[in-house]
Picture (cartoon, rainbow over the protein chains, first blue to last red):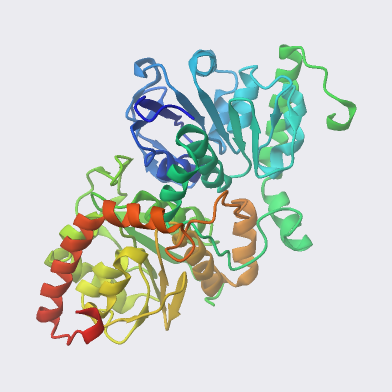
Length: 239
Length: 239
């Protein structure tokens, strides 16, 4: 916990092709943390579109971001284009070095991995990219929210809400997180039980896997290339 | 269910002071419905800020929206300013008249009520405004998602995700909704049990109630004025 009187600078990374709820789910929670400023940063201050077309606009460019107490890295499809982008990777590394907490959501973990920050770290990501974590030296943990030191990893997409509540509790205590949970009426009742590869009907899993096959193959190629560059010996099971 | 080959126009209403996840939670689900277009409409095409400062930009102005198959009305604080806005209320009424489905999230229900569309309808809204539903002639139902004819009501804020999955199932069948649930990894694990007034610790409930007291009083005044105008006899219990 951080003393209530210490102001917190919370910053989320935004990019073209983000999965918007990786950003907006946590924003809903983090923007309600008492005595905190929650801002969105991107390579430039121009508006972008999420992977389904929602328009989002950063508050400022990366270069204009203050040193952050909390860095939030969402995922989606668009992180792929940033995984060899020196400006973005340098910014992430610099912010992580000074941050109190780092919060990765979904395939945001791959971007943090590309920055060389996951070596030896227990981590998680979206189920469709889970097998790629060892390419970045991470130890994959199949849980919805994984805490490793001052890092919090949320698995796929909507897990960002669960992870953000954990983060709010780490920063301001359990009761602050409970108050936010009540404000946002977060007592979920999914009408189906199909949110994980383990619970989804086999035919649905097969169909969704097929629909992301192209993207997964591309992610594998990038991960393989980066593993070589980062000098990571990929365990046999992940090859 | 609607035949798979029938294209669906889905439109969300955006306004200054919306609670962004009332819009973005459903967008995450609805934008994945097969053979559908998901667009955001506002009074003008200018960017707006949500109640915590997130910048959102509509795709087009209300006047440029096509006839919608699905109308999605989010809530927040900003709907209050629209509840006596003839342009917005007329647009809602016109779209509802032609829509296959109407989807209200959180205090979006109050805006639909202000348009005179909730008379005799089973409905829900955010817990802090639940007692105001009878002012619009609605029958309050204390459930997270309420289906009444071709209307779906989601209660507070994050309930929009649950409601949107129900809507996706109504439109394209259960398996389509299950596939979306798996894509967005919606298997929630809230770290606390504090998402409803019934489950939250009493002290937390009291604190959150106090924090929205001013807004609730303003909403009550508006509801009272509109009830008189709509010719609704408010039941004694709600006075």
